[in-house]
Image 1 (cartoon, rainbow, N blue to C red):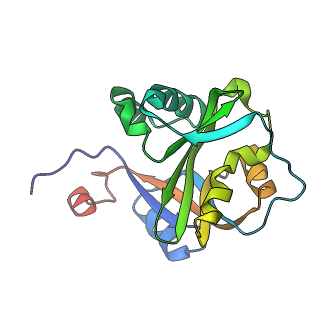
Image 2 (cartoon, rainbow, N blue to C red):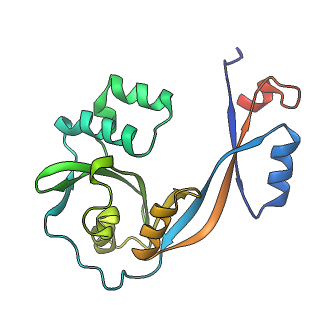
Length: 197
């Protein structure tokens, strides 16, 4: 099988799994970033939704907005940003737009399985951050509860204190933390052929 050109590999390791962290370090891995896993366990207390904030499914015409909002709000990796920019239709499936007075200012993607849902790619245009009700961040929550989803989760950067506070306010609890170790394939510690096949 022909070798693949891999510039960097990411090893995702649960922070509590010492053997995994040890392996990642033994192959020359360094922590690139870390994320908390969060699960919805409580109902938000004392939060009233802002009536001028609405959430709707993204339409094909929203594709470019979703791409630019994600790029501004969550700093998409350059490779993913370029792929989506070439075809904004890739950004529409499973995405919703968060409108403020009928103008799109944010986006949220929801991935569903049989009994679980994940909220990903929540982004608000920088000039609108901090406006409106915090529950707008997880607006799919009531809809997902109505669908009978037994588990609703999301991930947030360990360095994003404002988002972490927001999600805690909305009823999510931290259930684990994952460290993303960057490893340079082809280096002295990692056999690239075995790593990518």
